[in-house]
Length: 480
Image 1 (cartoon, helix red, strand yellow):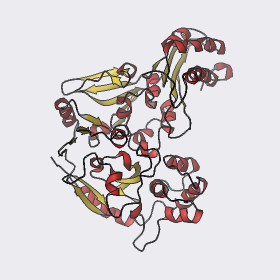
Image 2 (tube, rainbow, N blue to C red; image 1 turned 180 degrees about the horizontal axis):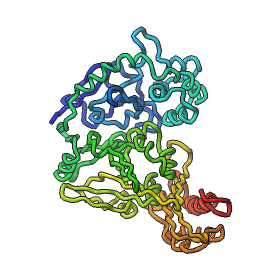
Image 3 (cartoon, one colour; image 1 turned 180 degrees about the vertical axis):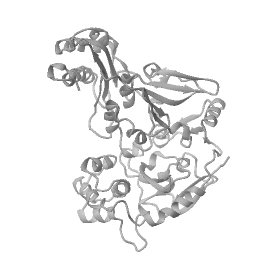
Image 4 (tube, rainbow, N blue to C red; image 1 turned 45 degrees about the horizontal axis):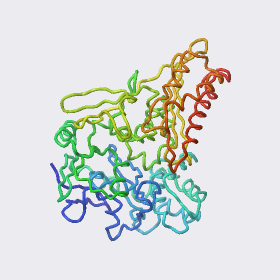
């Protein structure tokens, strides 16, 4: 069992044994800022919202390198074990020439004060390596996680389109065979990192992870850490004991069965996106979930396990009848997602259990499922309200089954049971829906906070049901 972390930086294998001032929960951002030649990465928000700290991670994908942009402020140093770390300083060629995305930024006037520019460059670099001649939607998505207060996005979008036309070839391409060799040389065994105040476990197999959870029920489990990392960066907590699941391959599998989609709890949202084409409500959720940098880190198990009352995937998964698979050393069980959460950030998971899989049943052709999000801005924003609806009608246009799941309306994501009971068996008409809308107030007691007032949430929740009717009513044509 290793006690150090190894990764590639500046085309060299770097090993960190945590004997100095570096802690296991030192973020990649702070680690880079401590080095003399990697000051391009910046801290703007320390919570994954601004993108100034964006770096790119390279991982083995067969004989090639797969590049992904991430927020370095949310990544603990052990999480990059066995990966390549690429910063803005690494993009220039040996003769000092700028990378194509950097040159395009100069030519289009895409930078002003310059604080945000290195983060934009790294997001554009990941786009450059993954998409040749990307369309506007792809470019916009790649830049969603980066904020600019000065220049504006027009010249930056123009620079992205102008530069991403070389099939990903650049000065780093010639180094890739060497990087592949280095990555293959790094030991991928489990890790136990112990310092004076912290213990950091990094199991390699599911059995190792379950054993650790059985032995250390008080350990904080991280599976992407986009939520837990804020306890370090914003609340300055010292997490004394951590179990990091990022190296457990068994928890990253995605299996598309005829009757369901089985998603490993440690699968990132980015890796799941390609598997949910036939789950349109989930697809709509992922399109406005955080940013590319966040989705490259965040996992479905982590989003569900946090049990947030505004967790976007929760309200989207409940209408599908999703189940959570919980496992301990001694047992394994399935729990309906709507029964998994019992209160504000409380679940039925036992102290020695891990979320190992999420099962999403494939809906029948008769089912109409839609998901909505109300927020102050479209991208990279926390939900004010989210809602996932499922409807099935009989041959006479009467409601045979209905599910109305809301987030942001209570201490947990839950169903509007009173409204559902009222709708059951009735004609799916505007009149019926308008009669059902007041029943939503019976199930929820929303609060006023920075995102919206109580009254707004109540009105919006009712109106989302009316919106659902307007988009699915047979009176307006075939349900969509």
